Length: 199
Image 1 (cartoon, one colour):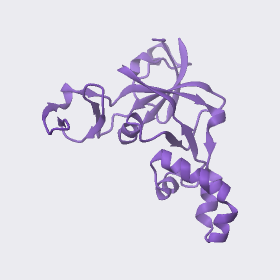
Image 2 (cartoon, one colour):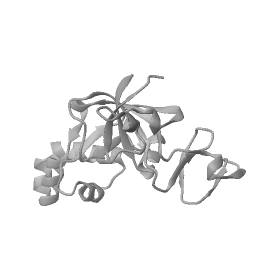
Image 3 (cartoon, rainbow, N blue to C red):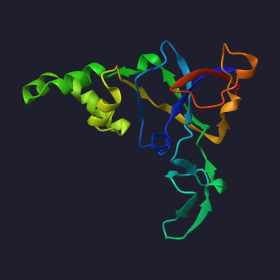
């Protein structure tokens, strides 16, 4: 058995991660003193996150999904005919707490101060913040709204590996619980330490 962390990600953000657009995840809480794998679980909320033939990862609010190739040829599926990822564990990353950036102090300074003189003085802080924002596909306003005066951490999505077959949450065991409750049966609120058999 391997000790891992299961982290919940909303479908709209997980699609960007799986498609390679988003390479940094923002959180207000992160696991401390942990080095190992984080397994990414797609929450059950809509939109549906699906893949056809394990290629692009797409979102839909409808029960019907239509896919087209570069020539405009396509076909339509019902959502139960494609690989739905909601409520499943779909990928993993390598995690090292020492590589997580705390960006709260920069965003607080940035939001409370104006002027080019200040920006020149704090350029060494702002450049990394702007780079992190590009990798998160968030705007500065979205970051501020998400943080709401809390510490905000940037987790690099290092060595992203998408599972060939999505894993059921029930394959993960929660430590320090009774026998009946030891399997994960829903996505954690943010993240959860768990054990899983190595595959």
